[in-house]
Length: 251
Image (cartoon, rainbow, N blue to C red):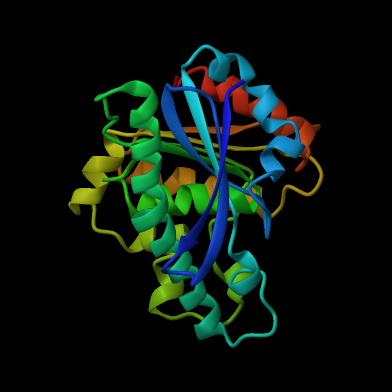
């Protein structure tokens, strides 16, 4: 498997950020690590190996990045406004720095062919980011595989709720989004997969996934919302099964 490592300065985050690329071409996929995770977590937990056949065949290219959760979603030492502002810095880093690099690197392998968008994926907190970034920027991202995420920001911010928390809380902004807003039509043209198990440690993820299902159905947005069995726990062994199962339908 061809890999490449990058360590580049982020103007939005004011520090160096690392990421790793797996694969020599194919459909690009941005991978968010689980809570407070690093770019190497997906590899270390066997997730890269789980989709190796797609990578080796040139059908999939993974871009695994670092998180900024310790300064935002996971933080307990900043006030809430600073926490969510730190997440917005991360949002701008991803959309304005990482995404252009993905297309630049992907084009080196695929010649002049550029995909119109790219996939996002992640597990647990990574799924939270994967779905949120996809929903906030369907003009950039054209598909998502979100595994066992929380989609209500109040889980992390509790009673604090402001404009920035709102635009990072998919359950809230989908509920408040007018059905004729142009993003809704973009959602209908994209590939949306949201999955959760019903075993240990999968609450409140089950509740949030069910609510996402209701909201997308109400807006007539096609989506594959999949609830796996009572033996399917919130843990890597099951995510290693789920990712290739869903990825085969997108690449």
